[in-house]
Image (cartoon, rainbow, N blue to C red):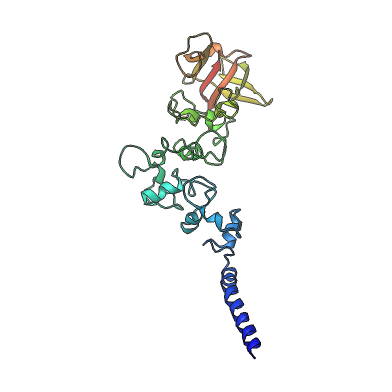
Length: 296
């Protein structure tokens, strides 16, 4: 009789121990970390490891558990693509999943929450580590947070389809490529992975093509691209023509180690066969060349 009671008690105790695990499994959270199994699986986390709750794979300073509770994406530092990292949204009180929280027509990243003259999306640029540096998901060398201001599109490397990468364009015509607009002398995250002294964003830069013909009468300009395709556009009186001159023997006055370049205004006389076209802006609707830069 005593043995039977002990066995019965042991059975009850075993059931009591098993209940919590069974309840967690039944609720869809094997590891009891507060994140459902399906959500963890969807976002490539481990539903059987509670350590995932504290992880931060997108380096936005929000843990996976915090991302889940706020409906964020644990592998995207800017869930709603408004220019603000997810962690920064919690500081300004804006939504992680709505790009325009107050509905005023401006993305949250372009707002100035504390009215200090610095946009929300730029507040953390000076302080964040290189690991937490801004995303560039399409690899066009323009940070995702800056794409909308330059009338570009996150996910597209050539938003206007003119054959020139977005980073190499010059949206505001200030003679600085889009990819260089946010560069500062204090930016330690230059991104020079191979240590050759040239930033990664400049490694892939190649000339647009070579002039194969120009008709002064009609303004027709024919350019043969590096890949062999031919582009025909038209130069008119408003076309800005520049030649970039390289001076490698000049004394070092900047971080370019003695290599300086200067853009000189030019006219159609430089549009000769064989001239190397570094950059070109062509108006899609008319085919008119708005700006062209040659390498001297």
